[in-house]
Image (tube, rainbow, N blue to C red; front, top):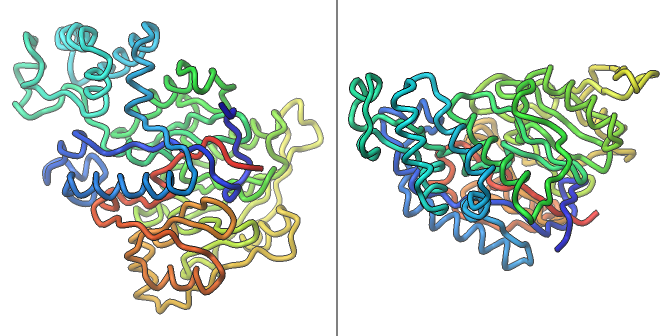
Length: 399
């Protein structure tokens, strides 16, 4: 069993964590999809077919795929993990002490697979036998006692590996807070991971994995925008410097908009020296370069910039030029394909990337630049605003 290790975006991918969408997507309605961060109500069976094809494309190319629900079921056999995750599920001021106790009693009595399904898919008012209390009486029949986690599909956000350490992140949106609890329990308790050293915790400043790019060994880029704060970027920088996991962190401000919620919605690595990027930001994207200061024992930082992102990244990576895949798109097509996650690719190795098939113009530009594209369907998966990189958390990559 290979130990977790990730030092770049493009080293040959060996092991990845995915989550196949399930009952939690069936909880989405026109009434709640905004609150649960989806732009529509997906066709669940088709989303599952698309995700199965995505997983098959990875396994066909030698990638080991680990599924969150299976890992979680196995972890729930461990009493300490079970108690922790049940407590997190009912830690909600909406439900009150009486309903909370009833919910704990119900969840604690479930078999591990059923409990995993409830923690991910949620628990509705009419699914809790014997419940009582004021909060229960005032709830509507379809209201959730335990909210579902449809965004668990995007496994990149709740954790990111830097070297042999895992950052269990601090997710910004309330609908996603429990995702990190599940991810953290899996890494802490599952024998596959062996309780790795924790680089980051959900209690810290907001930081999401979609904003963290491992540009090269020792070089991280961290987007600061809608989901990751400057405080989160600074905290991560201090920690990777203190643990010898990086020598440079590029902090990259991005627009605080849903279309650009994470750095990886506008730029991803497709080769050791090449990146696909949304053309509208290519000339304006800037970076602050952060390095350890003169007194690293006390967390001093040296901050310079801003510089154009491509210039700062090339210097930090020690290369002459970070190649930008010039999509040659007209502004309207560029905006459409960025919204459809055209820039959100998952590198399986140098010059080999998974991308949504619908972004035909961007994919042709990648192929013209020497990047082999593994095209997958994503019409339903994309309703939560995420592409192949968002849906995957690499655990092992070749150096």
